[in-house]
Length: 234
Image 1: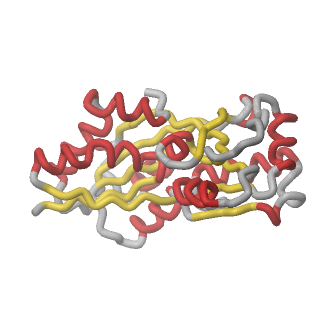
Image 2 (image 1 turned 30 degrees about the vertical axis):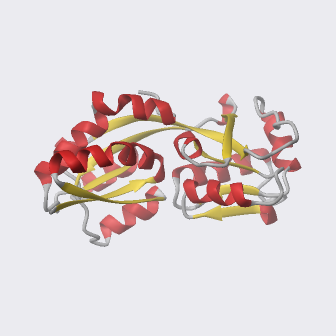
């Protein structure tokens, strides 16, 4: 059976998984997807990890084109993913206000723990560290940071925290597919991050034709409803 290996940022997990069963049944193949911080996925490609299709931020896919790992003619966008703030669904106190910079700063300060994806290799995690520095909270709240390999893991762990007043942030697509957490809003405009998630077929792909069929669906009409439902702006 043909296997398509996908290395992807967590923001695209819901899209791939949303079309996976139907695609596998239709084409009698298997999609083997790994979803984590985009920087970590980029590093795997550079180290020679077998891969047919990558889905990363546009800038990192372009890097892999320049390095000769991704076919430039295969590069296409899935859409834009905003970055948002989440709280545990079981929280009983009012949701913190986050519409303004001052409100967001107070929300972070009031939380006993803050959950984020990898603050060195993930798109959202890197940005949240910049936000913390901009707000002057990177040192003050450093002991409360809870960082995980990707946004999905960070949100899942936040959902398990017995203290329901915790808060976290990552890309909306990771928040919306995670049970036990609720998206309460996007970052204020001055601090917003909207990421263009882009796919490309690896030049080392053992199944380029099947990979193209998968790519066509991921960026095409068949997946628009899925993408929009989890937070993509298409």
